[in-house]
Length: 305
Ligand code: GLU
Image (cartoon, rainbow, N blue to C red; front, side, top):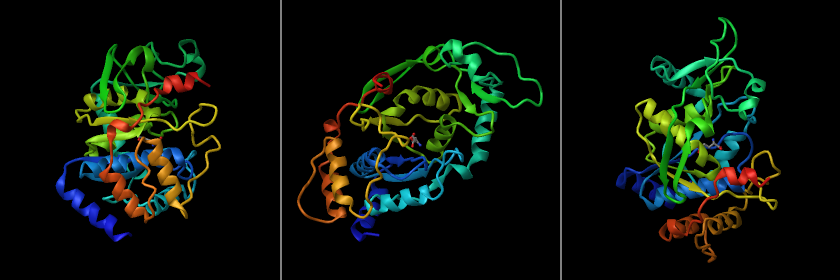
């Protein structure tokens, strides 16, 4: 590991209570869109003198790609983005998610549901009405019983964002009928367990945030600050998703992609020659949150397809 990066890292942990994180799903290699999220969250943590953590969100074995987590971590390291604490893996934390689910059930905030996709079609896929309790022994999901409530928050880049949980989200899934825990529950449990003070991530998750804040409140957990970065779109204006042909970034030649990611975040590119560590140091010193372009809400992105 680069000595200067290590030095900087240790200093940072000592001087601030800020804790940020990057939480990739290992469904493929690190592409440019995820590099932007990794770099944005890293820069923000460095500029606050805080800690930067990495969590592998390997909740969904059918979608996870063998070896992708290790490749993501190796690529991050090649880009000089080294976590300050051991990497956490969601696949090893099911007991915590189960305990949180039990807490919600005990409070009457989660219920078993065997509704099929087809049954939910009439309400645009949202679960809005109460449904009959599934017969004993039938496979069923667990859903959160959301209140009729507008829930808003102030994002550091996007500004105020509010959503009607009932009309726009519905009773969302906490645990699927195949026994897999949903991202929404796991992310809330882990952000709290890791003491994350600010979540910096792509704007595709902006519209997940109100339900996460509601879950935090339901579980008696603190709500971190949020900063949603603009999404990297392809030439058709579509999100550069892992399913689209988005090229992995080249771990063998990090500087061009790092500079492109800085430019994308509205930051100075620092074209002077130097190592990855030099570039990151200059980018940290010059980091300007006000220069980050405001994110595009995912509903608009989806609607533009
Ligand atoms: N694991 C999610 C993803 O890769 C990100 C979760 C988050 O940052 O809250 O899209």
